[in-house]
Amino acid sequence: MKKSKESEDHVFEIYDDDYAESLEFEESEILEEYNDIDFEDELNAEQLEIVNNLHGPMLIIAGAGSGKTRTIVYSVAKLLISGVKPSQIMLVTFTNKAAHEMIKRVEELLGKRPKGIWAGTFHSIANRFLRMYAKSLGLQPNFTIMDESDAKSLMKLAIDKINVKEIEERFPTSTIAKNILSYSINCNKSIKEVIQWKYNHFDSEPVILKLKELFQVYAKKKADDSLLDFDDLLVFWNRLLDEKNIAKLIAKRIKYVLVD
Image: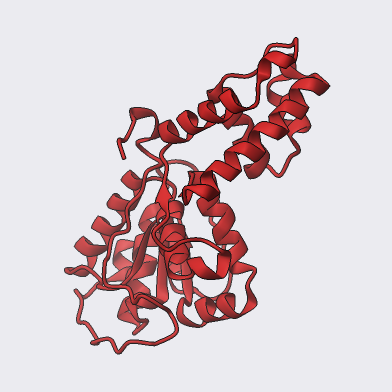
């Protein structure tokens, strides 16, 4: 599908094609040799403390340019040099640009690309898991992912189906309607709460009822044509992790999750 400039940072890739098609079978991995790294010389005291204590949940709060990404890159290196398998590490970022930069820095530090590491955006990794376990969620494994432009076009088709002329009030455009739906999903708010928060000029009962009808039509169109938008990727991934057996399987195989 065509990539619009607006959605450029939200389309996604995954940076290693060596993952197993399922996590159920553990594949043997060759123990790699990496560059020698002098962590004490190359990190400051706070960064070194983090890198040397990579056990359990940890939140790093620091300003821009303070070395958060550097700390994560060295953390990945520390894990790999300590014998952790690349496939046991998940490295997640919010944009493709950040993901490219992160894995490039890891590769430069280690002297080679860590083969099998899970690295990419939230959406790319969600996509990978959903294709593995699509059937458990009632999805087709060959589902198509819509970019923002495609999603808005589908929303416009859905608007044409619901006869907005039967209400007197002005109705949101396809772009605004898609934004309202995204806010509702990502902020866990009702349609009415989102409208009162972001679009209070549409705060009327007829418009809200019509929006609910619209979103049902939009959802049905996606289901009928095996389409997912960006919000769906995260929603279905979250739903997948609520499946205890699958969640246990993922937790067994992926031991370290680092988010930048």
